[in-house]
Image (tube, rainbow, N blue to C red):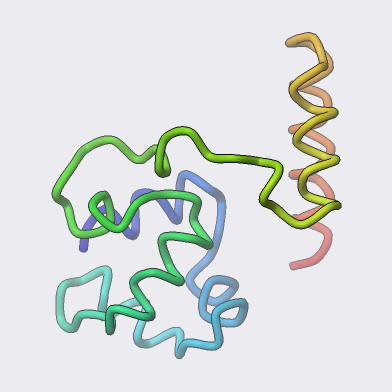
Length: 110
């Protein structure tokens, strides 16, 4: 599952953070990334959802790391929906500002 490591690093998430957030052992994440073991179907789905990608990408069945197309953002929880709705309305410069700020906040939590 080499794509697990690629997408995790692309998202700026450590093995420790991923393991903690999903209640998985960090050693398991490492083993998945090295191909020494494979997650259960339930864990694979949790990984894909958390990393906002597809199970096919994690299983190296595609090079496209985009999540499932046509996500209905209205089906998300209200806070996530509000953030995404507001973000979509911003110009590109303001989107860059929001991304920088959100990354700064996440780094503070580590």
